[in-house]
Image (cartoon, rainbow, N blue to C red; front, top):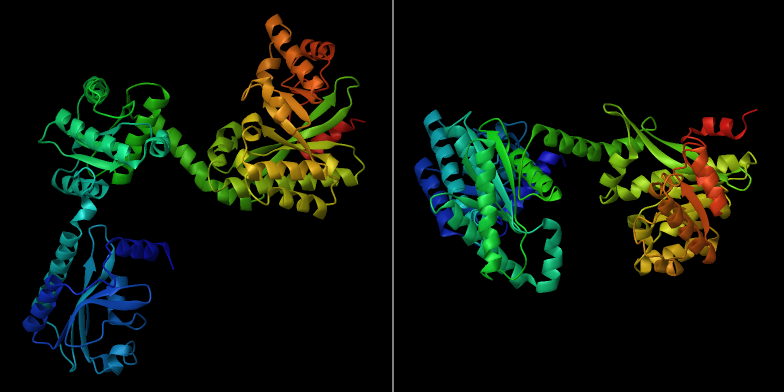
Length: 582
C-alpha cells in the first residue's frame, strides 16, 4: 500500500463513515438520483481497503461488495467520473462481481474531500446497457457534491473544538485556502500563542488532573478572544496553543501586539482566574497568501515561539535564519536512516588515552563522525542531541556499538592491549535487552569483556529505573567497565558517587582547560580526584591541550589524560600509526 492510499484511508476513518447506521439525509440523495436518471439502482459507495461499502443504496439489498474489480474502486483511484455503457462488453469488468450479479450499466462520480482525498463514488446502475449524456454527467457530479456537503455537515464537529467552541486546526487550514483563493499574493501574519510551555503540559496533567488543564484552556480561550475582539477569529490548535491572523504591519507593531496579548494572559494570574502559573509566549510568522502551505505557516510560528521561549522573551518574530536552522535539523533527522545504511557517511574515529604515570597508551574513546553528502562533515554536537530522543536512537547506538566492538576486536587480534570506550545514552540503557545484545556482539567478535568501557553521563546513571539498573548490573557482572562521562556537569553533588555502579570518572574538559591558570580550578579538580580515588574510582581528565595542564594533572595524582595535546581523534589506520610511530 502506497503512502497516498494510506493517507486516504486515514482521512476516511477520521470521518467515521464506515459501518454507520442508515441515514435519511443520504437516502434522500440516492432516491433522487434513481428518479432523475430513471435507473433502478443508485448508491453512495465508500471505498474501504478491501471492499466497497454502501452508506446508502436503493434497488438492491446488500451493503457491501469486494473492492477488487469494482468500478467504484477505479473512480476512487482516478478521482474522475467513470461511465461503463455495458459491463459485459468491458474487458476489465465482464467478470466482475457486479456483472455476475446482473448489472450491465455503471456510472460513478468521485466523492472528494477538500484535502483532495477520494472517499468513493456517487453511482447509478442499471440491469440493461445504457449511456450518460454530458448534461447527465454534470448532474451526477452535482449529486456527488451534495453527498460531500452532507458528509461535511454531519462532521462539522471535526472543524470545531468541543472544549473551547473555537474553530480548530482543520478549520484554520480551510479558511486559509479560502483566503488564498480570494486574496492571492496579499501578506498576512500568524500569531501563535502558547499559554503554557508545551513541555510542561504532561506534568500539569499528572499533578493537577485533566479538569484543571481543561479549565485553563477554556479561560485562556475567552481571554484571547476578548483581547483580539469578537470580530476576529481565533483557532485552538490543541493543548494550550492558539493561533489567529492579523494584517501585515511593521515588526515593532507586531511585537507590540504580541506582548499585549501576553500581558492579557498574565493578568489572569493576578485575578486568580487560572489554577497555575502561566508563562505565555507568542510566535509571529508573516507569510504571503498562496505562497506558503498551512503546515509551513504553522511550523514558522512554532519555530518563532520556541525561539522566543528559549531566549526567555515574551514574543519572537520568525526569521529566514531561524527557518534555515530548523530546516537543517529536519534534514538531518530525515537523513540519519539513510546514513545508517550507507557505509560512506558514518564512521568512527578514536582519541587515545594515556597513563599519566608512564605516558603509555591505555586505550581510546570511539567517537562518531558524519560526512553528509550535502552538508559535509558535521559536528556530533549538532546531530547527536537531535537523534537521542527519537526512534532512531536505538539503531543509531547499535551501529556505533557494532562498529566499535568490531574495531576493538580487530586490534585485540593484532595483540594490542587496549581498552576502547564508547558512549551510550540513557535511552539505550532503558532497553530491556541492551546488555544481552552488547555482550552477544562482543562474544560474536571474540572481544574480551575487559577491553570495552561503556561511558554514560551522570544524568543517565542517577535515578535510573529498574530496567537501567539491571542492564548496568549485567554489564558489570560480565566484566564490562563503566565510566561516568562529563563528570561534574550533571548531578554535580559528589554524594551521588557512592550510589553509581561505575569504575571510572572522566572530568569534563571545562574544569581542565584553565587548570594551569586559575587556582580555584586546580582546587576543584584536586577535590574531584581525591574524592573519586577515596571511593575507588579511576580518574581520566578530558580536554588536555597544554604541557602545563598535563604536568599539573600529574602533580594532582590524576590517572589518565585525553586531549589534543596527546592526539586528536584519529582514523583506525592513523591511530595504529600513532601507536607505533616506528
